[in-house]
Length: 282
Image (cartoon, rainbow, N blue to C red; front, side, top):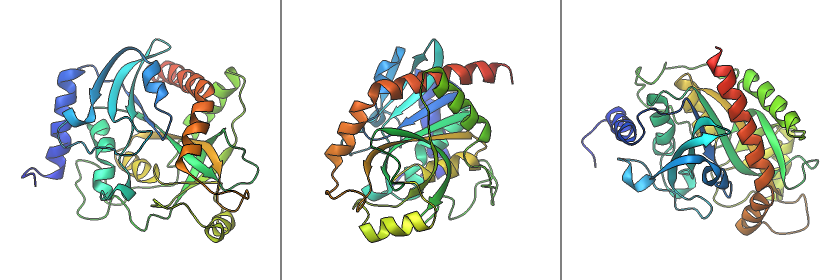
């Protein structure tokens, strides 16, 4: 076990990344299962494998490459995390959100969290991209549990607008610019790795969830703890259990993500370009 405190481990990772990328972007994107092609599309890109970054957790899930990419989208600087650590891999939530902490110390101001999710809302077809308006934490835990380090943020951070209204409006405008209409919805996080049962999906619908996944919520909570503005986008890769008369599997998730690759990259490129324009004027 490292003798360094958690804060010092985060700082060590940030310091290492600065040696590789001194002018780190203010905007970062976390890419969900099967959505890593956005990182591959970046121009003038520099790639840092996670296993080179001190204390950074590995991601062992198929569809998560495990590298930090710094490059340009539409000529605008952006960092992309191709892969994330998950609670169901056996990590605690402090480890799951380690990368978010590092991004905060690197000066990231806007974090775009993407994920592959099951469609609880029966009106969402596979391949739908959904703007996250709010979330429901069903992980049974919270990444802020334990002693609070004031260098990261306050003991009791407000979660009224976890997903920035400004960024949600900007994402809608970006979607319109590329001929897309994005529905809005509530994302629920369960810890997995088993998919939900039909009874659980009925419960999720009753409590107001439109999509269900196994990530994003811890990162969003930690980002807001650090004062980072958050935008969330779910790719509905399959109907949740009981919505359609067929079993669920990870291959379907990856196949659907591959099918929407073009529009997903186009949407993110446009969002990043518009974000950089708006950030320069703030």
